[in-house]
Image (cartoon, rainbow, N blue to C red; front, side):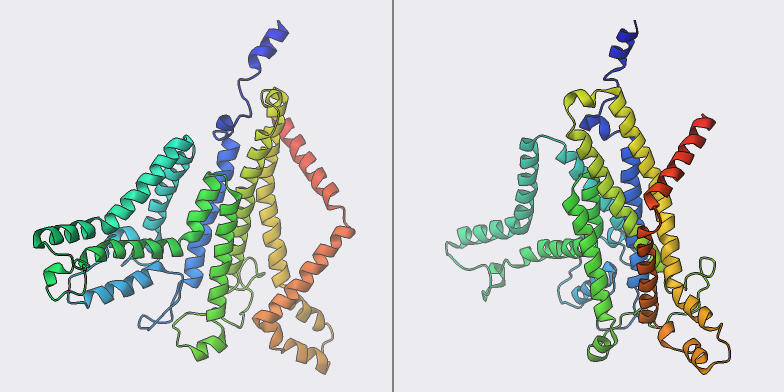
Length: 405
């Protein structure tokens, strides 16, 4: 009788791919990565998407509405009545604050969901859909242009080029303007939202390369902003970019650990870490289960152990994020700690000079002191048995959970 029950229970919950995609732990990791990706992008736009003033020749901020607005102003100044094909309510042009990004993010999410569902279909159907999209794009670009050109040559009984003609009726280039404006508008949106598009495709499409593309494009944006906001570049090229402050103020946030200028950067770093870890973890666990033998995928013990691994990972995500944020805040506070230690030698000329040193209050001074602190913490791994400590903490949490059950 017991064997029959075991046989019946076996296979009710397996580690096959279709079942894994519906497990709440896998969905929790994917949703966590998605929320952190959206939050990271919104926080980046708040930090790097601001200009010094409204009037400027060029402001390379992380804001797609600025570029689209410049194009619209240029089109309105042309003799022909031209406008961008995608409406402003869909691109966020004209909105203020975070409202500039929510609608594009919503549309991108729908398109990525459709693309992910398409990826689950057969190779033949995917190929047909891809060829259909490509054909529709080419037909929209050159369809009216070629048709009107052919009709013009048929009725005039003469071969001619569709541009540069004295007779304006023989110039058919205007039929290319609308499609080209649409593709230019789409290119701008893809360029600015590339981290989100790549990240969503990597999270829900189970692609490590696309997650790496999301992180890489984010770092490139941050590097370009840092380069363009450098004082030497700003003095050479007329830019209207709102650069980050060079001098850091007093630490008043997070219980007096972090200065207000550092908080957005620290939050972006933590969100990037959560997105990277959750996204890669989802793919790593699914690949591990996919490579298991068929007998193991149906074994209840393997299923139970796999669930335990996922649950522990979700718990560690919260704990590690808190610990990393705390250590980083302490590292950024290390320069003040140096000043406090020097103040012990009250009355000496050397201590007063160090306390009034401007280098400790500048950004690179804080970074150097934080690096020293991080090196010190990293060196503790040779002294403190961190795996043993983390194992005891997990054991204690497991005992508390078992007692509550």
